[in-house]
Length: 89
Image (cartoon, rainbow, N blue to C red; front, side, top):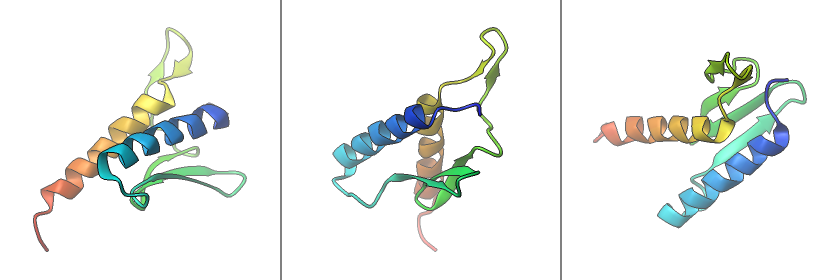
């Protein structure tokens, strides 16, 4: 396992706190879902990370992946950017 559940849950809690502070909306959240074997993190129903396909940068010098919280924040911001590009449908 290349991630810590505690670190991941703490990161999600921090991000959700920041989202709530900015939006005052409890339904705009990052969610952790698991089957017991696979863990998936979603934002607005869009998968932004999966334990089966961990696309965080691997840092050879320290033999670890980049920290989960900055990675998730980057992915949340990418989803927000994509959504804000949609003016109307």
